[in-house]
Length: 287
Image 1: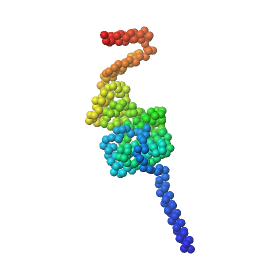
Image 2: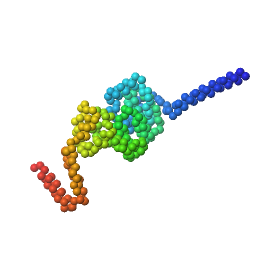
Image 3: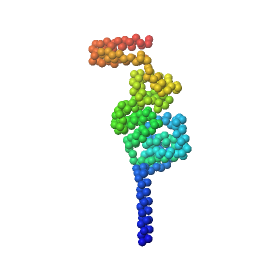
Image 4: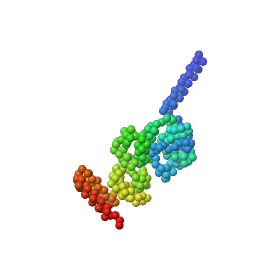
């Protein structure tokens, strides 16, 4: 009888231990195993939403110091395997770069099979939660998805990621900013998304004047809004548009163009205009 009691007690203990083990296992359900990888075996993604300036300056140096003090990244990055012993970052580019520069192995979750689209969309959703990622970096990330033929246009990206078309229009305008305009700001993160459409408008009106202004303010101790205002506040006379019944006269400080609707001019008047322009050319020729 005692043996039966002892056996029953042992069985109950095994069942309790098994139940506890199952409970702990459930806490990690869906989690991917992590491994320490040599940083040299991991390459940045072709869809990376970090620009080179994200890996410079006091903020990144402080970030590196935190990782150095911890002996490596505590929060794992995610990578996909592209070949035996070779990986590509899905998310965690700053953590990877910090470990690479420090010579520390990288704690990483490994996805063995992942398409470009899956990688792009997971990177997008994960990084949107990060406060240190600028609107400009997100805009350039989305544009890479179009440039590399993952998506046909900005509207398709908006639909896939659940973004409004008006928000994606701002990102589109940010992604199209000339380098000189971006460099006028101390950091791309200083460029507010709400400024994007206005910047696009003034660049379309007179890109040469805006780029000239950008070069003039670069390096000056102006707040971001001060840089923005210097770029958009062009004198009114620098761009003039006059509408005629047959077309439009467009004039900036450096050039004038005429857009003519041929249907509104008779062949005789068109020929007279050609003759007049030819005469102007002859008058302006040297010698």
